[in-house]
Image 1 (cartoon, rainbow over the protein chains, first blue to last red):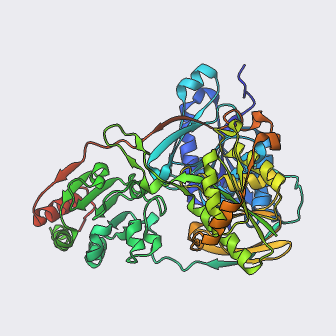
Image 2 (spheres, rainbow over the protein chains, first blue to last red; image 1 turned 60 degrees about the horizontal axis):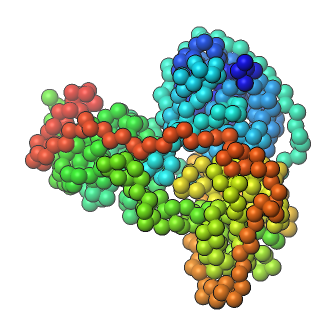
Image 3 (spheres, chains in turn blue, yellow; image 1 turned 180 degrees about the vertical axis):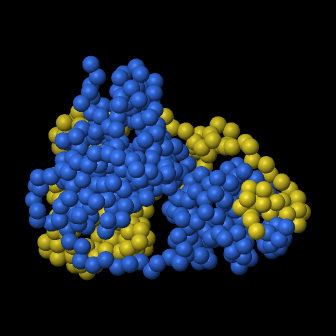
Length: 343
Length: 264
């Protein structure tokens, strides 16, 4: 007799703000589909959990992205995110439905909410994961699913695979942009179930007095399909690096060093303490290849790097590497690209 | 006002390198430091104490006996005392178990405000702060970039999120988690170091004082376990070319054309 016979399905917390659903939630639904497909014998469903006010109409969108079912908690107290009410509602959904696992985006909201819920349930939570798989051998031997959840630690120097053998649901927060979005299917159908929580109290403990928009970045490097990355070795030729990006219809991003040296803004920083990107092309210019930077871009489809140092670490994760000085190569590259276009 | 700052002693992850032959982490000679987000939290607490000298600031950690060094540094910076939570039964605790132990110690020591760093640079989980708040059944405010005002029964802070900043007020007691960029931590003060020599300001708490059910902490009480660890594989398929600058430029352009990234 399996220990967790009552526990079924993979739940994905669907993060929304003003009715706009965070892309990471759909990335997780796409990945959850692959997970349930790897253990068809369990017959698990992918279930979205959507919390908010007047969000029921969004349930179909969640289904179109791959959910079999959506549990909607629609309540005025959930209009804007609050740790208190979201944790109360999500905990009750879990207790009532007993999912095998519960995935949340590793966004600021997800990382505020998930630990609180996991502690209330006394279940294991793996933080900020970048890979998730079902241990098929374990599933076969034990008749229960076990997720192998892999995450970087020590600033990206070490990876650990974490398991939660003895508690259910198995919880994890997953970093945005590591899983691919599956195509949407608007004809897909699924069940929508409403859930009404019992509030421990309706008296809020935390008040958001004011929300200030941060000065908007002129670019969003996570959305760019082509990125030209600058490291310390390209600080002396950033203008021509921008020209390369312009010629390719791409965007300039950089390492932490370039931000710290004051050349580019923090919102262009790629890496452990910056953003994670996966463009179709990443041209790494004068980037040494510190693990902290690579962790944020090594999933790019094609990585071409230019560095003076033949031993540079960046070459280890590149598809093509060129030994050379950016300040001399890049102006020539602008011309070569122009010529290739004209051909 | 009694503020307890939670700290963790961590290896300086920027100093860790990987042995290229074995793929193992080289930890020898890597200095132990106070986790940067926690140090910002301590500085924020000390700034409140500067404004209101009645404030009592306690630095607390759970760890090995050697973590007392870090607490002494906290006292040398200006904290009133340190509390070291150390016991064999706590070894191997994950965040879920750690929060049980810290909550028990916090209840014993007493607090109006708990400040924790947002996340530690060795584990990067960002879970201990919120989970400790949950165990204490008090509110949390994560990602705090500035403390704006502390009153007898409330705290107002600025949170820094991805696209927005929020001004948030919470009832006390509560837990806030702080970001390392929020301030510049002060240096240790000579007179505080002298005081430390005269009086041992580090209190040691073991489970004899706390009476936590040993089943709920340590390896036994941790729902997560590490199955394997590994360092990143090095891809060996990289082609590294040493060509003239013009050849380099032409070859990149040609590749991009072949991959249809350059079109007309």
